[in-house]
Image 1 (tube, rainbow over the protein chains, first blue to last red):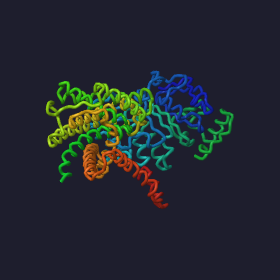
Image 2: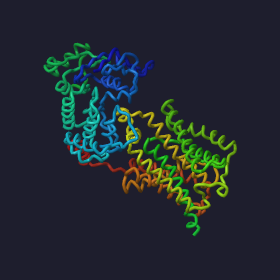
Image 3: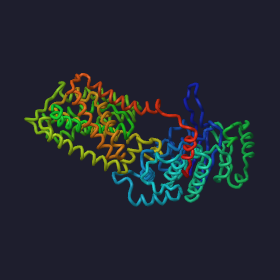
Length: 264
Length: 308
């Protein structure tokens, strides 16, 4: 479903701030894979997702989604294959527009947009049913501006938008990091349910090692712009947080000294 | 009494500038771009219309061509911004300067072209204010209805989301660059249409028409929205509010002249009005916001929960 080959990206090349964010990254995802991605700050996790989404062009290497080489495809065209949820709950929805309008824009991802009514009546009913599955009481607030919702509600709506038009690949960039623990747990539970129901191929970045272990069928650890650990299936199920720490030390030759990850 | 005599003229002019402010509303409020092209494109609309009418083209056709000319100026600014990566404010300034030369050449190198209402069949003119008010009113209603329909279409919704959240728009497959160009074309088309009305109303197109138009447009928007958002913050009410803002602006303008203020100071007055409207929300936030007690802060946290 996804094939990343030898991907390189350096930000601010030739300056003192030069930062090699992706350093020969290789990753292949099979149809239906749910991969959790962990790694310290600056390991290249978000850079990898942005490369897949096409936020900028990589320096070299190729990205294929479902057999299509998208390396040079602009971000808005690539969107037809992708569902994305960002770390910042404000980023995934248009605050000044109604919930129904946001969903309607998402429902037309990858389709030609025409000069016909933007939110159809039948769609409103469909959106109502979908919103009801979130169990947040949003099904009665179709015409409310999204800006009035809480961060968790907005993230849940974004998740719905990302998966409305079944994407070939769902990209979750620490999408619960900005939420309080209770809300984060709820959004994660929702994520699991939507991913399983639709059998979505998913990449989920998280800084929480426990979440990385309990979700998905595969776990990938990044360090200095490449993947240093890649486990799946039964092997992943048996992993513990302690295992991850020693795996990191063995693969990178360094202590796993990242407070943010240790604490969470 | 003098004021009552001046009132119909003020309303007619207010409607024309209100229409221009609707164009500015699309760039400033919907696309979130402060587009300075309008100072040039309103003049382009006036010049194109005046020259065409004096050459025997019917007024209504001249206005349509003026609209298209204005749309073209918006496309230029849009391409400067999206295809060449020039910041939007600078892109607008560049187009504005280009338009000064273009407008001069439209006027045939002169700074003024007159359109005599007695020899040409005009849509509106200051010689008959009641008729001018009706004509401008009909055009405005038509423009608002078309915009209202358009902004609820599939394309229109993405134009709104482009200004509201470009990240979200791109992630949902919206071509943000194309939408900016399209939005600026519509915006400046409407501004030029207002320019074509202005030329007919005044009976002339002047190379200096439109200097400071953006400021008048913003003033009309701020005055209008300060009232309309309190009534109902939806699209159509906002546009009607903007038209109202244009009228209020011109009534005040005429009042100030009647009170004996030198007309030299009027542009300064416009700028100060806009500065005040822009500054008030900032000042409120910066100097008059009370510190929240601890209890309120924890309420805010609770509000962040999904179940809130």
